[in-house]
Image 1: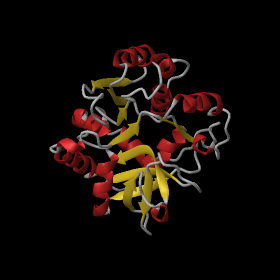
Image 2: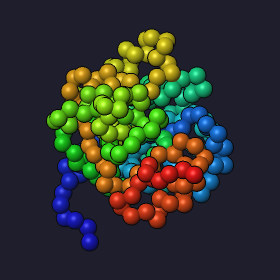
Image 3: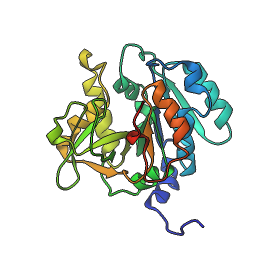
Image 4: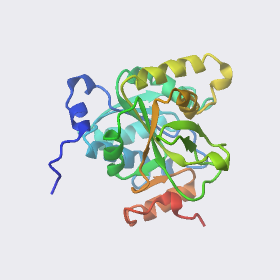
Length: 266
């Protein structure tokens, strides 16, 4: 039986001002050893994410593509033609730039509240429910806490009030409180802050290969970024083919307290 509780996010979904865009998805734009068949066979990562969004009533989605864009577009058209409104934005610089530029090419979609999702994560729909109903803040960063962090984790330092102080893969161990899972909620003045910071950063050529998390880190000093822990929910990051195989095999079998990020790769 569904809960009769009305979530704050329902007011957002029902607001006509927000019908044109509610989610921005950054597709993998380099293959890192994954072939097109591996990316699109079985249930693709992008379908896991879009299904989770649709399950929570989020049907207006912008997908930024790069690697194998035509194949991704064909899959989305086939599987979501009657279920969601998906706008494809191709990033022509995907081979020479990182995802900060992917955000820049889709900046027109950031003119009001939106979710930003990395293209390499799978998560339970309950993760979305929690972040959409989190304590209001211009920027809300979904984080996971664990005992050990590896070199590729996007590490997060928090202050005592739960505000984000720093976000970086190279944080010293003594400063690590959590990791970002690759899902960020922008609202209030957050979208404008983020867009302005992207525009300013990309005036400098050396920023072309930057992650958008460099912007989150730079904005952290404003104390406008709150963390939302989703450690109690399932989620999984897929970086290489081995991760993809583990995710496909195990995600559906795990209990709600397990996460693929804690499953050792052998």
